Image (cartoon, rainbow, N blue to C red; front, side):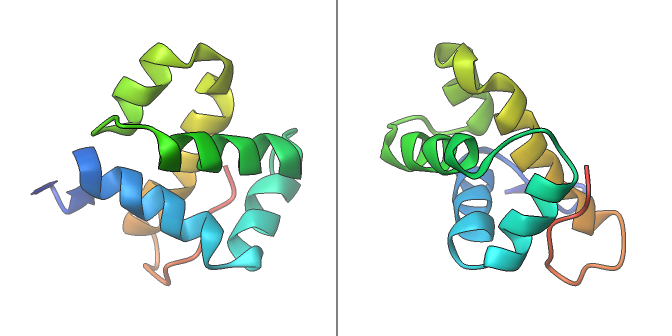
Length: 92
């Protein structure tokens, strides 16, 4: 289900994982616009993918070490919904 056209819950989990697993360009955009490194992002995506959580928020509540990179990844996924909608990560 989407609130105001934004993915939520399990759909957002899947979209965040897809965004960074299917495109090195998206990963590069996020890393160039933040202070995170590739390992931090990769570890977050792997942990999120392997979790049983049905939302990114629930995952981050239980894994506070991923809070900042998780917020950046969600922002990158949600930002194109505000802009041109090209399906690319937005600089955060």
